[in-house]
Length: 312
Image (tube, rainbow, N blue to C red; front, side, top):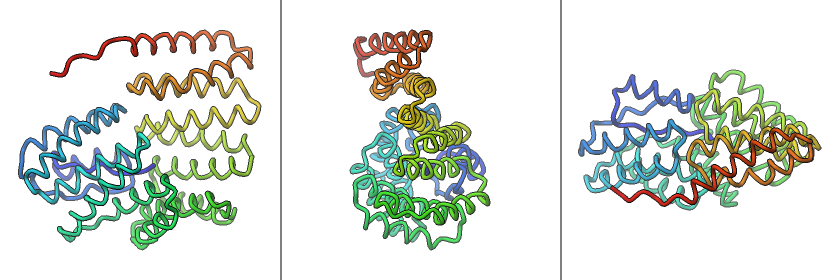
């Protein structure tokens, strides 16, 4: 899932550098100085949390920044922070909330007469998650009209995923997308292409091919510094390797996914990997790995049992 987080704290040069680190595909918009300086401070904290993979913490901060932007009636900041918060919601699989925020973001873009292609792309992805195929297709078609090759590639990936959902994706179309991706230097976008390849192969029950694609997807997200998506790709790879009968590879990927998610503070996501990882490790006779999985489970149990710190 490729998206750009919008910033208002940094100079244009610094903002562009951070956005390229997070996403790589789109340049940072030239945002005006915030009406409320508090937006700077809060948004900075949110971006730092996002960079560490702490998506839930980032979302809380972006929500605060958005409230400040609304209070100030600052269209530019409302656009940016609503988009940022929507991106976080989509990462934690809450597409309904993402679409609501993106509607607000696009409305402010219209007020500013500002390009909203990135919001269109993210909205298309959210609509697809909700099974709203016709809406997702219409949004992707709008974004595909852009001149930016990276934006066009993202739109084509969304359209191909919709075709794959319907069982209508042709190998020639997939090959064309992979060819187009060669002209785009963006690890995150290459990860999205591999995700498409993996999903297509999995639907065709070519589980080994799917698992290898998900492994490459994980590498792409890692190179892009997008560790939540990296862990999710590892989990997909683990499931596909298990379906292919390669339990040792499945156990390895599932354990690594759980460990990464645990380190990012996603205890629930990490716990979901424990049982399949342990089952796969036992099937493969990987006693040492099974022990590590159990140890991770015990750590997670302790975290869940600890009382939450009082709000400051």
